[in-house]
Structure formats: C-alpha cells, structure tokens
Image (cartoon, rainbow, N blue to C red; front, side, top):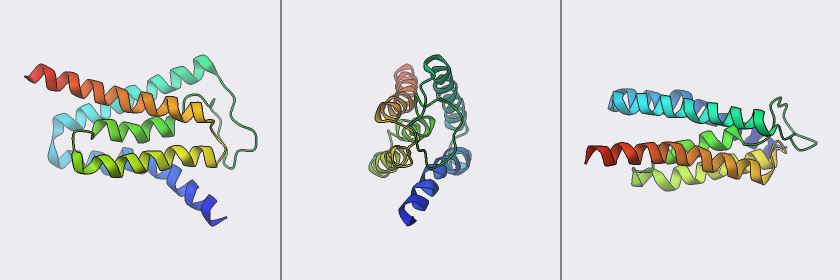
Length: 142
C-alpha cells in the first residue's frame, strides 16, 4: 500500500518538475534555453499523442490508476526522459535525472498502466528530441 502510494506520487511528480520547477529554474538562467525547453517539450507531447492515436494500443488490464488515452507510447516516460535529454550537457545532473526518469518509467509498469515497450518508446522519444535539437543548435553555433 505504501509502495503503491509512493509510485502514484512519483508518477505525478513529473508534471510538477516539467511544468513548474525546471521552467522557473531556466527563467532566471537563460530565456533562450527556456523557450527551447518549452517548445521542445510541446513537440514531444504532440508526437506522443499522435503516436497514441495512430497505434491506439490498449492499456494493461487491472490498472491501479484511471487512465483514458491509449498506452503506446508512455507520455510520462517521454517527459521524464525529456528532462534527461534536455539537461544532458550538465554532467552533474545526468545521473540524478537518469535515476529519476527510470523510476518514473518503472512506476508506470508498477501501476499497471503501461507495458515495457510503451515506456521504452516514450523514453527514446523523450530523450532523443531535445538531445538532437540541442546538438544541432550547438553545432550551428560553431
């Protein structure tokens, strides 16, 4: 019971981290990076929802929380790994963000709202988009 409550808290925490804490952090640091953060997170969300509509894979039976959208790919996993991809250039944040993203992905499996392929696909999408866009931007500046 306590573990289930912790997993629910953990899976919901990505929304606060993504939508509140990191934007406020970037607001004071770098407005250009804040714009990139918001626009690329929007791109990840749109791509995940388009894929959900295209594949329309049902969720596992016996979910511990209510969900209404199709399972594939996992938006929570995509957003968690998005933060890792976005801040990958910051070496001191890599390991904590990787651990956090893996915990979010696992919480989706634990709560029976996703299958492993759902969270893996979400992780790939979420990490790749900001990482590649950032790398392209860095290469253009050189």
